[in-house]
Image (cartoon, rainbow, N blue to C red; front, side):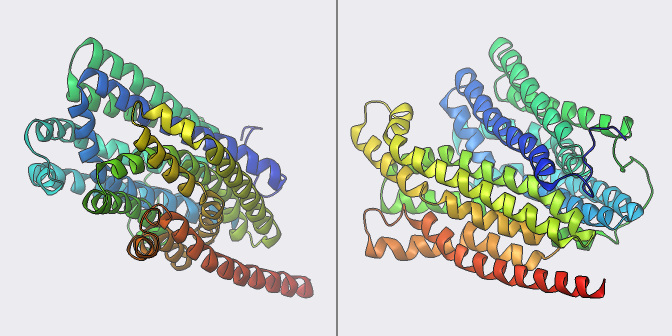
Amino acid sequence: MSKKTINLHEDPVRSSFYRYLLPALSGMLIKSLFIMGDAWFVGRGVGSEGLGAISLTMPFFSFFTAVAMMIGIGGAALMSIEFGKNNLKEGQTLFTQSLLFTAIIAVVLVAAGLYWLEDMMALVGARGYMAELANEYLGLMLKFFVIYALAWVLSCFVRNDTNPRLAMYAMSGGAVANLLLDYVFVLRFGWGMTGAALATGLSQILIICILLTHFISKRGHLRISFAGLGFDKVRGILKIGTPTFFIELTSAMTIMLFNIVLLNQYGEGHVVAYGLTANVGVFALFTMVGIGQACQPIISFNHGAQNGVRVRETLFLGLRSALVCGVCFLVIAWFAAESIARFYIVGRPELIELATTALRFYFLAPPLMGLNMIVANLFQATAQPNQATLLSLGRGFVFVVLGIIVLPRFFPENGIWASILFAETLTALFSVLMLWQFLKRSRLQLTCAAQTL
């Protein structure tokens, strides 16, 4: 193997953590820029109706992404655990079956999506010209979803097979290619939504090509082969990946719920303020996701190797990083909230004031958000999906719904904005309790191991 390969058995935990962290955070930043850039080209080349059409298709892509991430993250976590036990054959089997199951489920979803395309658009209330644009975009994008899903799964396994930089390079290359093709297809050729969809689809092919160099160079343990074909590992993969599925799915459901409540009970101004807050807040969310991605392969590997000391060291590194980042986001947003709102909103003082309030309430939550996401990631990485699912559902949907229902009754003006903080606070109580129990068990296991020696 290359000297640059991360040795999860012997390398210092701190250096391994940062070697995973920097590519993960870079990947999340690139992902956010890619989303913003793609929308900019559509807005310039197609118009506001094009942006509306993309918005209408987002719930379906959130579902597709959730499925791919469930298989990729679940399979890669189990693979790392098996590699930690030096069960290389089991790890290879998990990889092979993850790819096979992803291909099959993606083909089924694509076929269903193309068959019920118009019904799907009607379900989200698409009408007229915007519905035509959404059909045009989603109809072509669906044909690339098998490639998109396989790219997601490959990136998860390549990252956990001690090659996080290549996963970052693949995402970066895909993002740059997508933006360049957007410029050519949408602005130069005038292909509209078809050009935007084609640019995104072709960029996914490039991502897969870059990821495949990992196997050509034989840098890690994994190989592209037919060894282990079957479905006997699928149940375990889905069980571990379920928390990720719920995170993605409930995120989309929460956005839809907020929009419905705000539109019906408050007005369009509140919807604009929430949309701005959600878009700015994605940087905090992606940062916490990146920290979790840096922790996961190290924790999974050393959990499999029964090295509890390295598991706890990685956990505390992740928690400290998330807390520091969360506090930084809180302080910056508290003082810069009005400037951020003015950057997005021009000539609407009342709307700027509303968005400023929404931003300040939302960014009280990132420190607790970081705690909750890292603890949930810990349980997912150590093959304890029930605990991870409980925390993910709590912070992502259940407690948010409770906050939306309860808080406005006591605080009519700002209660709705505090619902995210409310959800993260309640989840944090469960996180601390479950973390304390985990550490207690871990210390007991270490004591028993020491006595045995």
